[in-house]
Length: 122
Image (cartoon, rainbow, N blue to C red; front, top):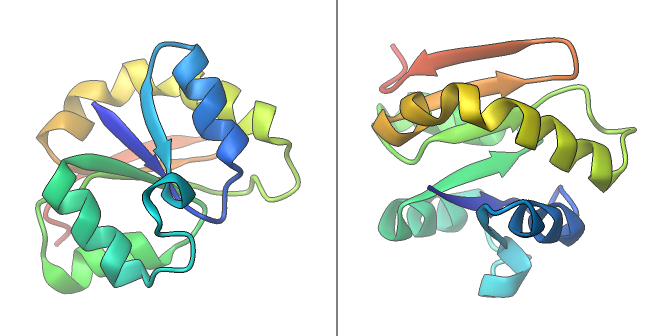
């Protein structure tokens, strides 16, 4: 699984995930730092990325498009946390939802809750 870290999360999150053995890339490394959500969404579909974001627009795009990909991890309630805490939260939870993300899912992840919904969102 390849993770695409959105611009609203630090590039440090991607680096920490790589250090933990995950394939992770920040949108800035792909020249998408100022790209629209639609452009990032389309790139994630084309390159089979799972989008990791703190932006609710990606789950909304999935619903509007009735899309089966890309999978999205929507990090909620993490705005005040450091990149190290973001990465730790992901590392602690991705193994439990990896199969769903591979099939197509949107995961809502916060420091206190994890919920997963299969795609397409109905």
